[in-house]
Image 1 (cartoon, rainbow, N blue to C red):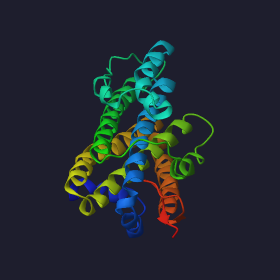
Image 2: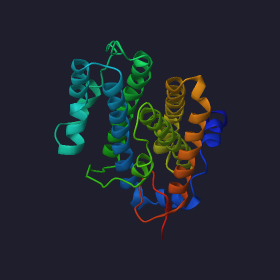
Image 3: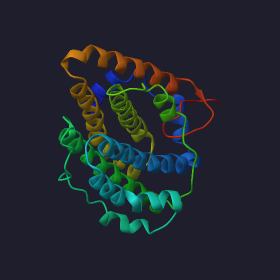
Image 4: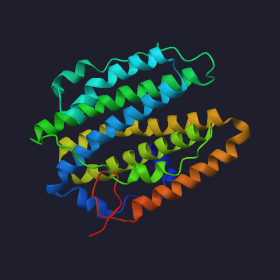
Length: 255
């Protein structure tokens, strides 16, 4: 696990504050941790889906992708459907054709399809754990974290795409770091689950960075590194600064 986490820790600008770990491992906060984790898994899949639809496939393929995601979204946003049936709905193929004028279409599709399938598998696993712990689903407000990163995205292409890929990398890397930080402080069921997520979360962060650099091209490698550093400083500030709204990606507890 040390070898797996080392590049993550080097990528991130700071460690999760001990105060957050203490707050996250309180019994009364377990429902919030799991509920927010659940929603984060869906949002990660939605963001990857958005990237495929906007940058890599035609409208027909994009519409098919939206239909595939519908049951998961209905459960969260409309509280419709039986979560147990979702295990059979996580079927998505890389055979979706990229746009003919998209130079990075298939590469984007390959990485994002795998990411979506894994995120929705994790989504289902969190639902299973919530059922085991008798935690009912309820709506929760989003944390400041993702918005705090996204508001700094540039307004022109391909920089918009590159910035969003870098943000995706930070979200995945921070998730990986936090799962590892929580694992020693929770019961065996949760600890085993969090440890099982580390490898895929680490690969997701690497895939996002790889795509950002490929799309930018060798001539712009220095600019990408500058943007990675730029968002790293913002991310570290969000993690270290006081935050009154406790969530999975929240900052240092204000209290």
